[in-house]
Image 1 (tube, protein in one colour):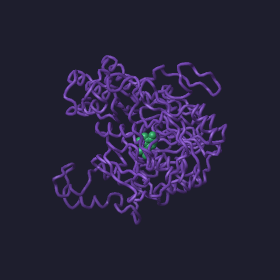
Image 2 (tube, protein in one colour):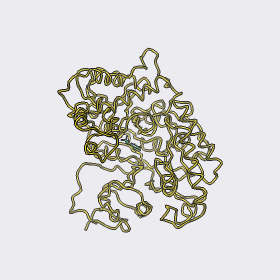
Image 3 (cartoon, protein in one colour):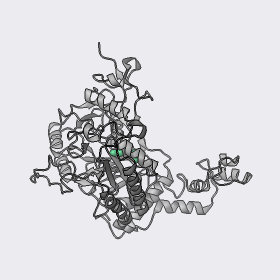
Image 4 (tube, helix red, strand yellow):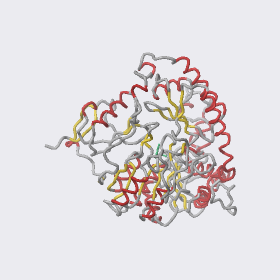
Length: 550
Ligand SMILES: Cc1ncc(COP(=O)(O)O)c(C=O)c1O
């Protein structure tokens, strides 16, 4: 449980959820939205004909959802007396948000119904309070951050992330890079980083918060993948406890909220909270989903009441899986090469093994990142094989598969996954015909040598800081663009974003020069079957680029 826990709050309450139960019990007649009237519209259809649950061929079953779904509708309420208003909270929502702030160690918490996306957008729109505001932003960010820069009309100085040499995966900018950026751009409105990354890799942000605060800048953290951080001794520290000023967490990813349920936590004097409220009202619906908000409330209550104990079963499952994995040496686990270690504090000597005060010293135990050390299966191939055995991973890339455990994982999950890997170990023992089975066309180790850098990374090795890049909502004129085959897009400026999804980190943003390296990365990902957002050609053969200036 958070160190900010105060015993005088009634943590056992779940005010929004309780309001929904009371609403359902009240059986009052609805003369308000939503139009489904607590599911009544479907119940009426149900009464007209006998409905057989889950029998889609029945006539009425084609229009009536299953009972579980209908029951959810009974609690899908809106802003009426007693249910409060997310954009002007005075009752149950205010109470639920205050309880969340207590539980997560924030001064103030805001419920988000549009995921971390809404949090990132509103943070950027708050800090970049006028067009042309300079902001220091980690380059490998989720697309919502690039969209926030566009909406804000900001000028972004991109900070190159540090790449973990052991894995080839980008983590976040080093302390040195951030120090250099705040010195060069003292007028910047803030520093925006993402931690942990999609693979659960991270570090203690305390020294970075120190550098930002010394420069008078807020530290904003996209902690979408770390809503559970700081809540159990075996979990990495949370960004808030490291001193971050604004932190966005996808409660739906690593805790127990419904999809889209997220939170924005604030502390300290560096963010304009009145403006933030206004920005949140701009990017969030005026009819936020109560089931989603109630799920945030329930997720918080579970954690608040039971504390670290809620992770016991999930951690036991993950440990059982890792023990079993150790007996399958073919499938290796991603770990910090120097072992997990404490980050040096600001001013402290950097250990020789650490390239900068940053990078990768903490691994989320729930994000199990594995790879085929025999080099037979690519990450994509291994994912395909696992799915064939009924185990669906979170994500894969050309090398790794990310297996996401959580507080909800069980021993049976771990056992089935091990069973699948044992089977794959036998069936895919040697190189097979490449693409048909998702098997890598050549051994991974050959293709990705020691200098391997993951294709997600848009690394410009020649500089740590970009010049300020101006973002805006100004659409690119069609007549200024042309379509070119991905094979020959190098040298052009992109006219659209190229976003492998997941992880949703744009390889290029509109207007950015496509280097030879990035052009190759796009092709490699496309050929490996990666999915993209942003590319208008759905066959992924061509890319929209800016015509060369005459
Ligand atoms: C790092 C990061 N930030 C933000 C988001 C957006 O989160 P959400 O889906 O909750 O809007 C994601 C989504 O995957 C993400 O990976």
